[in-house]
Structure formats: structure tokens, C-alpha cells
Image (cartoon, rainbow over all chains, first blue to last red; front, side, top):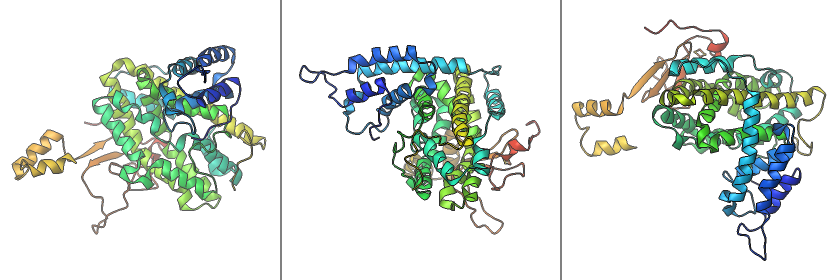
Length: 347
Length: 91
Ligand code: FES
């Protein structure tokens, strides 16, 4: 990913650090050891971690070292102990906020059937404002471009976070995760990878489809939505939560994507632009069944202790999604842009 | 991938071998009847129209609508949730 613009003192310090060599020397002293204390102080001072631009960007960049890397910086930084220490402070703060912001339903019996039914019930509950309805009926051409930009931060690497969970799962849950992910990755056809279909939609409306191209334009909450997945995915102990998160995404996808596709066609975009959304209507009707019974249910049957984290992951997905939707719709309702700058709209 | 390799070693030459191989790796096709939802078909199969022509199919495992409300039949599009489709308890 290209280097983003810093958004405050902590992300400035991180990016300055990453631009130096990983091995500190008298000639080139590294600022890496300053990072964890700076993060700790900033975390103590913030009043809303999910909406803190400086801290969410810092966490996003630290996670990005494990995905595409950051252009112009050494790959050695990935496992640098000072950076990992800083990441731990950020992860703890975010997880604490999420745990207090989510209310878990009464937990079902730890059987596959009951876990699936419980997740369908949780994700079927009325979840506040609907981005899908807005896009279907009202969004302007400029807003639908912003919608793609906001979505691009995650969707250009769609499925990647959940893939981290595969080696941590066993048996039925593992087979289910692999079956879903194989479909996400196009079943062996690169052009059918969901991230590739999404890139096609971006190009179709005149946007740049380069990974991370719009990272400077999106607000903290959009980074937070992607960071949520990386947090759950890169910590083995949270494997229940990443599984619950995927189940929640799959279970709320088919009907919403039908509405998104309708919105794009309403504005006159062609089938190539709508293909990503059409694909999800059909794919996720398959995935939600597998995710409920075999993946989440299979995991809980194998590891009953993870029951509450499965529901935590699903509930956290819904909470962060609602925050992000509110942020975007609130801006649109008063005629503003949901982006940080309006520099990059449809060409 | 491994199924083809096994064929080469002669284990699956005759019908009895086929059955033994199938039993050891699970059934070749399954239809999973999901409560209040679609029929999930997994394995080696074709979906054809009454004349035997292949229907559009873009994935290996498919969900077939059994509530009647899908707009992408024969596939499920999640509409069963909107209409509150209920299956009988599986016997
Ligand atoms: S069974 Fe899902 S739409 Fe009919």
C-alpha cells in the first residue's frame, strides 16, 4: 500500500520510524522505542477510540505490515518488538471499547443448530439505519462513488482477514471456512475473486482500483471497520470472534446486496458495475448457511468455551457497521461528503 | 486432486473399489436441507433444464430455493428470511 498521510503525532511517529532502517545504529538511531509509550499516552487521552483518526490510522498501518506492506519501508518491520508492543496497546484499547459497546443476547446451547439459529436471530434484528435502502432508493451518483470508496478499504482485500483463521480451526469448522473462502477467492478463477469483481465496479464508475488508493480520504471509522477484522484475525485467542464476524457478514449480505445492485442500475450503471453485488446475492445465500451451521456451529461444538466470543464477534460487526453507516448517512443527509476531503470523487 | 491419483493405483478399478473409496472419503453428493432455508447441494452434480441443458452456475456448492420467493431461481437469494419461510421440523 502507498504511504498514507499522517493524521496526528502518533501516526507521524510511526511513519517516520518505518521510513528508517529497522536495525537501530549509532549513525541511524531508530525512534521505534518511542512508539509504544506515545501510543500508551494517546490511548489514555482519547475519548472515542473508534473515531480517533490518529490512532485508527496507526493501527491500520501496523496491521498493514502483515498484508500488503507499506511502500518504501523495510519488510523487517513486520515483527519488530517495539511495533508489536505499540500494537498491543492499541488492540487492548479497541477490544475494551468493543466489549463494552456490545450487548450479547442470551447465549444458546453449544450445539450447531442452536448456534446457527441464535446467529440468524441476532443478525436479523433491526440494526438501525440502512445503507442498502439509501443506496437503492436515494443515493446520487457522487454518493454512490463515495460508497465504493468507503467500502474499498476492506473490499479490495475482501476475505483476507478471515483467512488468517484457517490454521487455528479444525475439522468441520476448518472445512467450512475453506469452502467459503475458496468461493470468495473465485474458485480458482482470478477474475471472479470478489476483490477483483469489486475493482471492476470501481473502474466502471471511474474510480481508481489500486489497493489503498483512497486511504487518506476515508474517516477513522472506516479504518476502524477494517481494523476490527484484523484485530480478531491476527489474535488466535479471538478465533471465535473472527468466525462470528464472518457469520454476521454473510447473514446480512444477500438482501443488502440485492438493494445495492438496484441502486447502481437505477443510476444507469451497467451489469459489469453491478456484477459484484449480484454475485453476493447468490454467493452469500450459500455462505450464510455454511457459516451458521458448519463454521460457527462446528467451532462451538469443538470448543464450547468459544461460544460467547462467536456472539461477541457477530455483535461487534453489527455495532461497528452501524457506527460507520451513521457517519456516512449523517453527512449525506446534510448535503456533505462522508470523506475527509472531497479531492477524489468520480472522475 | 488426490482422487485422480488414487485411481491410478488401481484401488478404484472395479465397482466394489469405488464404493470403498466413496465410503472412506464421504458421499460424492449431499443435499443438506436447512431448516427454514434452502437446500444446499454439495459435490459432483449438474443442474440442467428439462432438455438437459446446463443452467447458469457460478459456484461449486449451491443453495437451491425451496420457499419460492427467490428472484434468482433455482438459486436461493435469502428471500426466505423476508417472508418468514418455515420448514416442517425434520423427521
Ligand atoms: S429458500 Fe432462500 S430464497 Fe427461497
